[in-house]
Image (tube, rainbow, N blue to C red; front, side, top):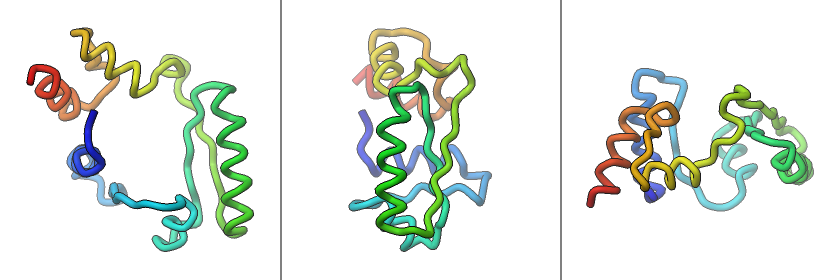
Length: 116
């Protein structure tokens, strides 16, 4: 729905008051980007058991590519395990209220995009 540049801008605006958060676009391997940034920790979210197998494989591959990296998995609140960007986008596109799931700035941009 949004270009990479638009998503980066939305994240940076959303977290403008939080100096520890910055969205930066990249291409290539996440592990290479982390290394270039001096980050030794990658945080990944798991919504369901089905996410775990893929994410676990990726974590092991990343560790093979760069043994110093650590990958931490975080689980969402149980109220949000069903959410995906595709679902939120589809509900919003059909006029449903997604304000509980997105930042007000994102909601505003979604509304603009759907009304265009």
